[in-house]
Image (cartoon, rainbow, N blue to C red; front, side, top):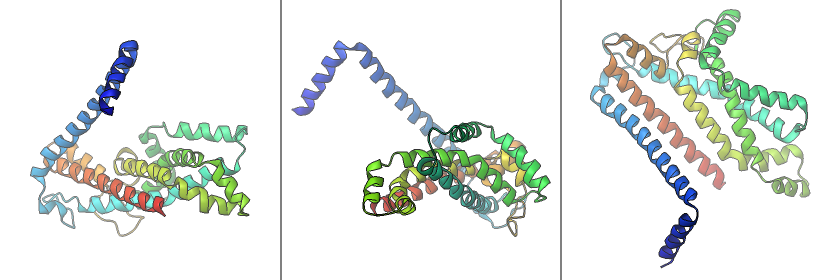
Length: 286
C-alpha cells in the first residue's frame, strides 16, 4: 500500500515538473548504456579469450612456440608492488600534510594542489619519456623493473594524493576535537583516529592506481623494456601483461593469445579489486 502511494506521488510530481521526469529518464538511460558497454567489453574478451586458453600459456619460461604469459604475470605483480610501495607512503604523507598541517589559504599550498592536478592530466607517454631520460639514461639504471616502477609511482602519485586528501577531509572535525579533548596529541590523533576512518577512501585511490599500473604500456615500454622473461632482480628488464598483450596484438597473427592475455589481465584486476574491498571492510569493522 505504501509503495503504491509513493508511486502515485511520484507520478503527480512528474506531471507538475516534466523536466524532472526527463532527467530521471536520462539518468536511467545513462546507467543502462554504461552497464551495457561494460558487459559488451567483458563478453567480447571472454568469448575471444577462453577458446585460446591452454596450459602452454602458463609455462614458466617464454618461447616463441608457447607464447607463455606467466613471466609477464610475475612481472606485473612485481611492478605493481614496487610502484605502490613507493607511491602510497609519499602520497598519503603529502595528503596528511596538506589537510592536517598546512594552512589552506597559503599560496604555496595552492600551487602544490594546482601542480598535482596538472600532473594527473599528463599523458602516460610523457612520463615514459621522462623515465627514459632520467631513470634509464641519467641515473644509468637501464631498462629495468625499478626504472618502470619509479616512473609509474610518479604517474599515480597525484591520484593517491587527491583521493587521500578527500578521504581525510570527509572525516568529521568532531572526531579530532574529541581526541584532543581526551588529551591525545596531533600525531596520535591522525594515526589512531583520522586515518582509520579514512581507510576506505584511501583504498579506493589505491585500487584506481593499481588499475592504472596494471593497464599501462607506453611508460613501461620506454623504461622497463619488453624482454619476455622473469628478470633476476629489480634491475633487470621485463614486460608486464599489458606490454605482452600489446606485443602479441601488433604482430597481427597472434590475436588469439593476445585475447587470452587480456582475459587473464581482466581477472587479475577484478581479483585485486575484490581483495582490496575485503581488506577495506575488515579495517572499517575494526
